[in-house]
Image (spheres, rainbow, N blue to C red):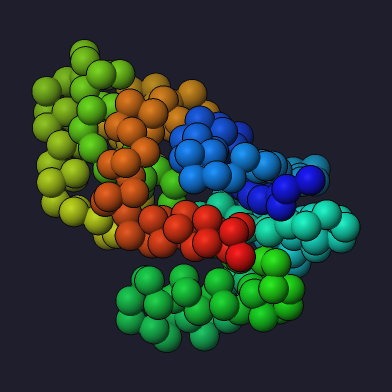
Length: 222
């Protein structure tokens, strides 16, 4: 059996994103054995409430117990990340968001302590990737009020790197989408917008995300 790539995701939208966009790209790069696993929940679980000790770490460790040749990674949001993640409080002293996320990822790696594990936390959240191009918004929401459409396009123009969209919590990518697109539903529209935009646009505009994908490919072929 070829080496297995296990991707632990935060919810159903991310799972669809992996299946519809990441997997085809990995397949084209010679990686076909990919397993997407949604974080196991408990009563009262809500999407975005990814607790390290209760959910993230146990899920990663459970996967790593398998005897097959594997690599394990994750796709979760930095936005609203719980403060029980390793190095979280220390990361708050760093000026740049990229530095804070990298420190937390390194803390996760050191805590789980397995060379097969490559932690990844999306800066700031999955929805930021949707602002990589305007095609998805134009094709899926042709009847948006002109003011709303103009603001969506202005956001794309303002942020050459959409991973940096998050001036304040109320302006996180998901909050912008909910405000500008009436009846926006993440599970329904998230993957659809990304598909319309195309994976090359995301790889071109989102450097941290691109580095993660390229590192995964390298690690799978080592």
